[in-house]
Amino acid sequence: MSKTLTKKQHAFISKQPNYQLWIEQPHDLRDEYGKKYGQTPLKAVIFENNRFVVTDESAEAVGMTYDELIDWIRSHETINAEVWDEGAAPDEPSPTYKERSEAIFAAVAKLDPDAIAAIRDDELATHNRGSVIQMCVAALEQLQSEGEPERD
Image 1: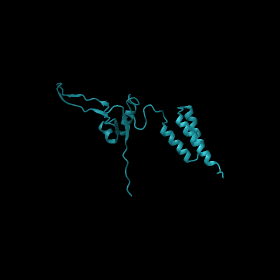
Image 2: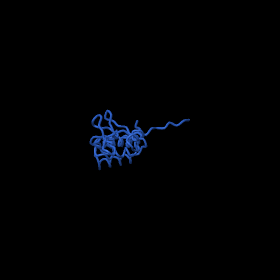
Image 3: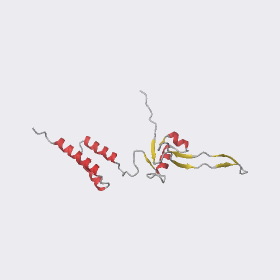
């Protein structure tokens, strides 16, 4: 049996198409007499069609490692304003709605009402999103009805 290696990649989204984050601007190369003989290349993250995917290759192209480039983008001043991680909208509170939903479904699958109640209580104390609270209530009701004996 052969193993298939999964290529590491992480995507970022920009509000504008073809948006650029410059790592290093090009500058002129000059000899000892001041005569220009070339220019350094532009090192930039370029969002083609509003998307940039970090891979080992794209990181190497700008002189960084995969992890360095992800950290650089995440710490850039435009993060969550012009640029954000794919799958996490810039204004969405963490944990995201998707993360909460997955945790609730996992707790239902494990028949764990205490975990659902903890999610509900945390949500009430932090973001208080009605849809998450309703999902918790529905999940608790579902577990409660499954635990009741059937009536004739």
